[in-house]
Structures are given as C-alpha cells and as structure tokens.
Amino acid sequence: MIDDLVRSLRPDDVTEESYQARRADDLRKAFAVRPERRRRTPLLAASGLLAAAAAAFVVFAPSTTVAHRPAPVPVDTPVLTARSVLLAGAETLERAPAETGTYWHEKVRTFTSPLDGVVVASTGETWYDGRDGKIGATRDVQTTFADERAEKAWRAKGRPGLPKTGAARSFTGLVLAVGIGTKQVRQDDVKKLPADRAALQKWLDEARPSGQDAGSFTFAAARHILTSPASNTTRATLLRILADQRGLRLDENATDPIGRPGLSITDATGDHTLVVDPATAKLLAYVYNGEDEQPVDTPPGTMMIPAQKGTAYAYLETGWADLPR
Image (tube, rainbow, N blue to C red; front, side, top):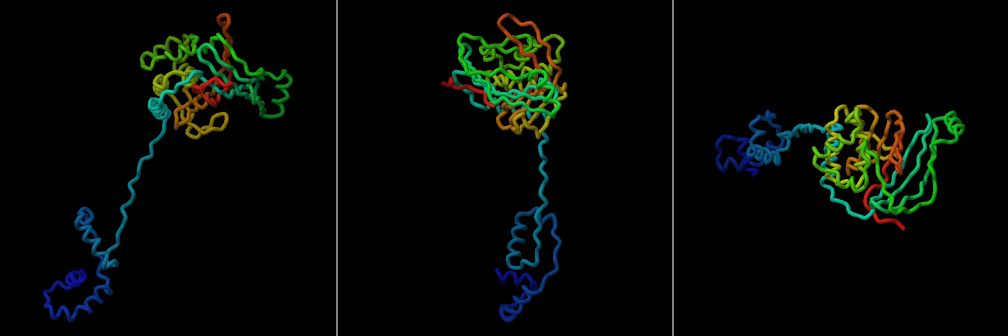
C-alpha cells in the first residue's frame, strides 16, 4: 500500500532499479511535503466508492485531507395545542387496559372560596358499588387567607365554608347520583354511556340546559365523566368531543391545586379548566372560575350543590378498589 502511494506521487514510469534507489528518499518527501489542498467536489461527497478511497488515503497522509461533519439537520419540535393534547389523551385511554373491581373509589381534595381571599380545603373519600359503600371521614381541613383582613372578615361571618367532619360511615341501599345538566346520573347510568361519538354527543345535547353554551357545558360534564367508571372508550370519545371545541387555551407549565405538574386546558369562556396528566391522560384537577350558580329545586331526597367561583377539585385517587375495613 505504501508503494502504491509513492507511485501516485511520481506518475512517470520508473524502473525497478531506480525505484529502489529513490524509495527511501521518496518516502521522506511523501510524508514531509504537504500537497496543495484539493477542493472537494459534489461527486466526491456523493460517491461512496470515492469517499472510501479518500478515507484510505487519510490513513497514510492525514494532513492532506480535512474531514468536515455535515451540519445537523434541524428537527421540527412539535407544537402542542389544546386539541393535540386532548387527541393524544384519547389515544392513550383507548390503549389502556380496562380496570375491574367491586367498588368505585374516589379520593378528592376540594378547594372552596366562601369569601374573597379565603380558601378552605378538605379531603373526602368514597367507595360505591351502585348500591352499597362507604364514606370516609372528611379530613385535612385547612383554611388559608390572602391577608389579615380576609381572615378577620371570615371569622366575623362565623367561619363559613368549613365542611362537616365526623367518623367514616357505611351506607346500604343509598342511591348516589350526580347531576349533569338536566340528568340525574347514577353509577349504572355512567357505565352505560355510549362510546360512539354521535350517540355520546346526542346524550350531552339532551342533558344540556336550554340556552347554555355547548362547549362550556361539555367541559363541566367532563369532570364527572372522566373521573367515573365510564369505559375507557367512552372517556376517549369525550376527549375528542372536547378537542373540537373552539377557543381552547393550553398551558404547558400548569400545576394543579396541590402542586402536581400537568397540562391545563381552559374552555373559550374561561369558566372551566381541566388539568390532565400527559402520561396517563387522567384528570388531575378541575377548576371553576365562572359566576356562582344559584340553587334550584330538586326532587325530594336529592340535593344539589351549586358551583361557586373559585371551586377546585384535585383528584388524588380514582379507580376500582376493594372496600376498606
């Protein structure tokens, strides 16, 4: 190989005798003299064969060729939008295995604002199988104030907003239902919610009170359905319906009321915000910033809790579980 290199530096025909006589001198010149740098041509870069030949040449005369790394090709970073987050969440839910169990378990930390500058937080827990279950004791009650004036006003009004506390209790034969618009939805009803988009949209339209904004109502309903024993495909369909709402706003650096990072999506009215975990598509929290709802008459034996501005729910645990002892 060295001999071939020397011959390429002396293109004239040489005899074996003269070659042997000059070989040592030629070798010294080959490695001591820097040939004029040649400009690389597109052909050299495009041909694998020529590139390999150039690489072989560099092994013996590294000073004659300078290798340049090609500039990295920029990769476009996907831009997240509220729509893309919701659609990705729908796909995540559809791939998740279905959970099974006896009792639907919810552990929720609730934040209310009974007065300006006052926030009351407490944690509640329920287990329910559609007929029987258990309600855990309300615990970890904490009240925070924006300033001393807010605290004094709260105390002067008799400390409003404090939840009732007591021991955990079991219940039998009690039908729990949640109000979604005009519908009173029991656990069995939630399980039967359709996964077909047209059918679920029809159900939402029938539940929506007359005159209420469709997008705002869907967001309000979403917090109940996404944290219920509805099927994964039903919840995925709901996320796709939410994704088609106009005017959605996304915050990629959001945290929920207990400080967990997530992606928050706010509807066009600004009244409803969902904070979701991008890894699991689970709802971390729901925040209501609309006007205080007014109480309405309900059937005997039922009770409606109207939404108040500043109310937030952080979902600590939701899923199937056994009834604790």
